[in-house]
Length: 68
Image (cartoon, rainbow, N blue to C red; front, side):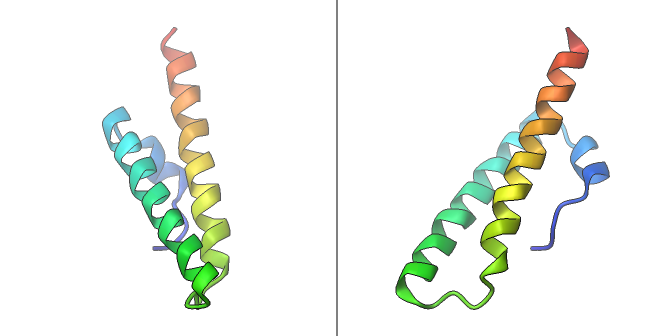
């Protein structure tokens, strides 16, 4: 999965954002286990997943603040 674009994230509903975060956390968990067992081929994917989670959380917080 490639890095998520900000425009794509802004087009998501809050429920879709929560689902995306959940999927990324599961992917990150699996990547950590692959790294620990020496099976991880693309080590940069860990960093991308972490930043994607942060990106979604940031945009979600912006949208919640805008509604208030």
